Image (tube, rainbow, N blue to C red; front, side, top):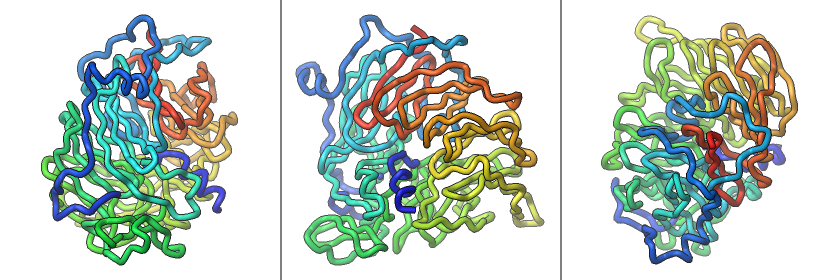
Length: 477
């Protein structure tokens, strides 16, 4: 189990994340925000390197990849300009930028590429020019966090993917800094230190993060004080419902899931009193009603977006509360899986004034510890723990096909009728999203470094993160 847990934390997750404590609601800005300028050439060269002699294919107005798993949060790209015939050799990146530790995925909006990382004791949010790779701004603050010993080899960098909306960047650091930044210059609009505000404070020995037995990880929240955070940190990526930012929080005075007003950071509602998981919430219409669907430590739940009221709840407990993959939903179905557990489909329906849930089917051939699935035209696609891609019929859970061996991790992106599958080896594989059979349409080696993240797909471009770099590719050149 420990080996599998170590593998899990090398991914994002998603997903799916401390520095001095903050006050109630909005906090006074901590750390530093620095915009780059023409005079800071040395810093820019260290941060990024433009490699192409000619510019990439221009992005169309409004094209974006604003958060974890794309515009709808379920791994489906909008209109792209990727080639019909895949090139035999991958193009060279047209720019690349050095990164520190962390497994958040890149996001693209407003001509910026935003990502988070950690360098020694500093956690950073970085914004690069999407065309040139120039570092436009960086937001930094000190962070002192060590995960539970089971996850020590996963690294201590941020794993929650940022979210961009209305020229604002929302990001969650691994030790609980939830921040809203201006996309233009990185200035702080609001911030909340989650363990400081919602966790029970206790005396902190030695003035730094430490593991308390096998139960709690403690991070500093003030002079001589600390507060528990999830064993491996905050990793679930936030999402939006209307004007509310929704994320996993927990803590003695918090809710398992909480919603914050996007403009101010003030709490809108708190829901549930149980451990958080390491998965990311989604917003989807299920059985005719828009719901927040999320995996907590012991359950999969559907919440009313207006007030966080639980609509239905299904038990799904994993050791260490380490549900990781992001659930997907379509029609009356909600799908999820975890380590050594089958891909499970719940059928959600109305029952009088309440809701009814029942297990519609389970499939052991598409079970995954880390990877998330997607749904396309009545079929579920994804990669199992054996590195096999599989297609499962949504209506009854029957396996249509399963084939290949492509590593251990892949959260695919649907682009038209093709799956873009980036595995942990830095290899991008194209697979037909068709129940007619497994069919490879091309492949490209994009980096030699490990890539436990999901790509951002915008127009003809792919932005990917490896263990040391952010790389920009243009397949339309």
